[in-house]
Length: 330
Ligand code: UFG
Image (cartoon, rainbow, N blue to C red; front, side, top):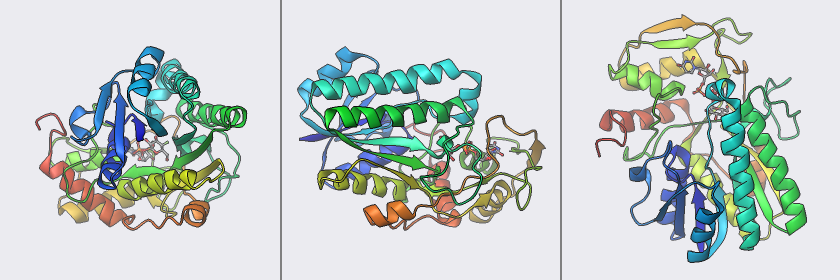
């Protein structure tokens, strides 16, 4: 029996595929390669190129591979982009998930780990944010992920399936060896942008707003190392394999770091000065997002090992320095 990873060629998905392969799981990746990279997928994982909105595609994968559990990453995942093109987010994220659940139901696959997000909380009233905080997404991205969480709830109730929704805070860093990492076309994420500036590939980094009600006026986020995230996914799968009930868990390092602090950590790790300019706020950005991850620590016995901003930036730097063109020239 195998594990299906939708979106397994993307940044977070590919790190989970790598971990599953190292742990001896038979791993099957389905990805349409719109934003993912074929070269990011472990060479020994089975790979199917296609779109999960196609029932024919999903049925062919599910008929050929005996799938017993699914990690569902395939989605559009940028807050800013979702503000400009909300319908595409509903199409890709909600219709994609609906199509997947339909196929899983037909093939009686009953365990799913869902890639959700801190963006479901929007502008939270208090920090750190617990799973029972009000859900009030400030972007179509968060809204569509929340819609899928609700769909999973009713699907599980009706079908006897079980799921874990993992609400990530800011995934960052790279595999410590530097052989895998983050590679988005038209990069919008803070840490890769800073490191591209350190590499001389960009002139400067724009700080989106320095007038937020935070310690230094810049947005605060909770950065979590992608390898710690991968570990949490494996633990969530094992939890379901052991008969655990459906649940929702935050995954973060529980430490708030400002944009300015990330820039300072990157300058230290790279030993390079980064030019900074102050730009207007980016629509859809909450001032502060910091996780309470107590529930994941208790229920999964999850202990993030690599989540300090220094380690995150150092590992990301190993990747960017050794792969300035990402996966393209491999
Ligand atoms: N930022 C800048 N300049 C940049 C890029 C980002 O100042 O050039 C700021 C943003 O305004 C934000 C912070 O850096 O305050 C982090 O921005 P990212 O784009 O790196 O990440 P986001 O917080 O927007 O979003 C990420 C994921 C989402 C997820 C969210 C949860 O992309 O999928 O974390 O916290 F929902």
